[in-house]
Length: 93
Image (cartoon, rainbow, N blue to C red; front, side, top):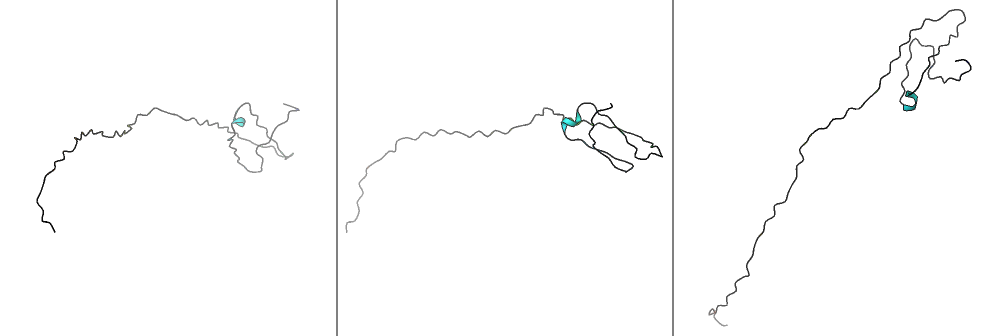
């Protein structure tokens, strides 16, 4: 691993740290955890926990009722109108 370039994702002086990767390209491949002690007198005690969670979507087929509206078609038959001429007496002016 000597003479290899590494990318630093997190650093600090705290007692706890975490990092969440959302980019899919960063979630693939090998990872190396490197620790650096800047104190030359006292060594460091380290406990490391690595948790990997993969989110998967689960789909299922679900039946449902689709309401379909059909218009009612009525057929009406009309006959030709019957016209009768009648004479009626009317008072003339």
